[in-house]
Length: 270
Image (cartoon, rainbow, N blue to C red; front, top):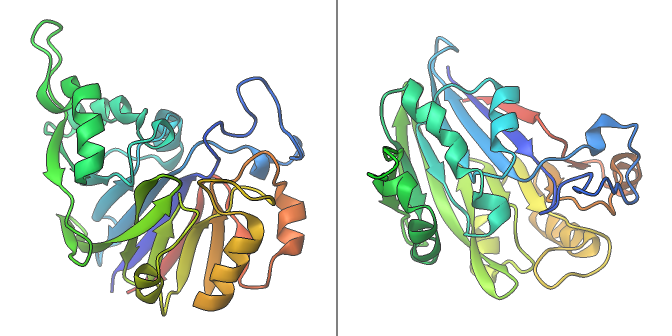
């Protein structure tokens, strides 16, 4: 028997909670569940010995260093990027000690639009930098097209991910389904073809920025409509802005839904 473990490394919106100016908004600063770093997800498949593991990171938030320390991560088999925005990518260099410790580059999967932005912006990460003697730490890997799947192998076995098409304002973002879990962290519209791929979930982790509408993120009523339609056994709301206090939001949610908090994890034997 193996174990799948999903850990929400960070669940905050692009500015985190509190923001850099110390603003907590509606969030109670005395509740540690309201302290939110930016969104990243860790997926781990543990082998029968419950020690050997395959680890996949989704996105490299600007807070990645503290997130990896909190999760005690020392090895990563692959990184998947949802899109090229700063709050999903600007912690990319924090993978350097992970690559050095394991004496090898980490495979990083990007679609065409994300590659177009990230490869020149972080060229030294993918190609090295001779003048500064920076070795490359990531292998640029092509993300499979929508409708295809991606298999990541590691010490714990194989993890299979299916990329999902999401609308994120004026760009397309990726979500991922792996087994009976789906991660849809940055979206204000889920196409019908993607909705059909989200049927039968044990866990849905989904965008819910605030109570009012937003041009590129889901708002509360919209997220509730998705949960009502998809009927996952459990739903966790992520990408939470300073408008959303943990306790107040919890009181508004149905029994199968809850707000995320940093380091919240979900496990299942498979």
